[in-house]
Image 1 (cartoon, chains in turn orange, brown):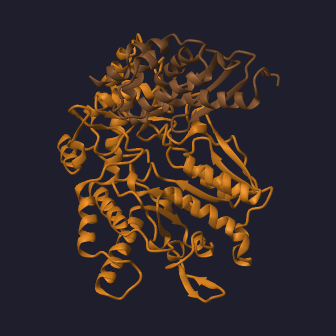
Image 2 (cartoon, helix red, strand yellow; image 1 turned 180 degrees about the horizontal axis):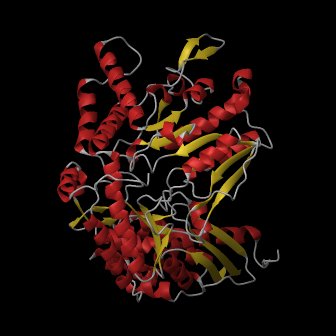
Image 3 (tube, one colour; image 1 turned 120 degrees about the horizontal axis):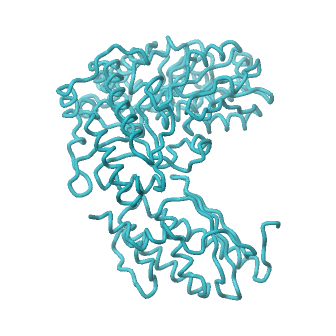
Length: 428
Length: 155
């Protein structure tokens, strides 16, 4: 993710891209042009995605994988085509892609499937967690990649441990020694607060050395840089549609094929069965085994269109562009007296989530003044409360970039922060 | 500019120079409240003297709105009866939750009328209520314990 030779987007390319996103031309708060710097929370959607959803609903809508009429056929084709394109986008096979509601559900799916292994006999015995076993996470996780593991530990009696974060916002990979009792190592591909990209290859190597499963939270990496799960050699990975120009209500769980084949289901019901009798049922092969009920369809189709949109621009170029924005933001913030960046202050192994605090101004108050200027940032703990606690903070301001942001918008943020300081009479 | 309506001078004054800040002993009841969306927190103690609020002390981490609201709260309730405090609280809650639809009564709310602007920012209403939620909870606990049985940290 760090050695990028691709050229950043040119000014005319940026303009063309922005024109694809209708919402970016609206104004907020008494006529201010919107400066949307909250794509880490949710991204905006281009017309191409909105059109794909509408076209699907107007022409092909039906429940997928059931029914033999023409619409059912077309809907199933559209859904499975989206799966195939999304799989290619992240370097895996279509059967290794499970559609979920969002990334959170994907992580819960893995955690619950693992604890269900205790009830399915010999076939999944190797996955069973017991008291004394360990699940390892990191201190920089989003709650979505922490709480499900706390709950798995509670259900199984396993112990939760975590890699610590250094003062510079990097992961201390020596702060936990894995052992034969380590069964799962779950970590983010990019911190949603600090932008930190941990050393994935090293974490995977150490986990596999002790035969632990790896689970990668790729919510903040897949939308912003080229990602290949097969090359990363992770066992599971998740990401969300709405953070990558796609619809909400659809996420993806990647699982290594032999693992998905061995795991029992999480949610059960229609669609995911092989044979049903009154007494007992057997289950379909993956990915259907993990997609109970009528799935989201226009959302999956929309995510397929988002992937097409991103692929056409090229993820290496998206990453190069966002690197320019991040570099500019980091340099500008460093020049404002009273601003403290939380996390890496250079762009090495770092993505475009930039969090900071201002001396004598609470994050909420800073965000309110920025909002008044039309600048949308996130304030609070960004669902990473333990990370904030580790830095002795209750809340930070976070600007997060996407391919449609411009250097001028970064400058608006920097100017806005000076307005924040002026408003609250913080002498710089 | 709407921003000045939200951050009125009274609010910024209370934020910079909060009244009755700090936790004091003894006290009759304590409440700890948290705003899970932003991580702001307040620990607030009340001392009752019969049916009167004798003191309110607190320790808080939070934005200017939540800090100032808690400071103003102490001005409005200390020295008043519990019933008077509750009716002030109800008027205050009605105002900040009104989306700008309720004209506040300055005789009842005094400095707290400055928080009328908060009602136009739904995301900030919780900030303006955090200290009041703690006060409501603490008074309830104090009433449940009965008066005259002061607690201290050691207990």
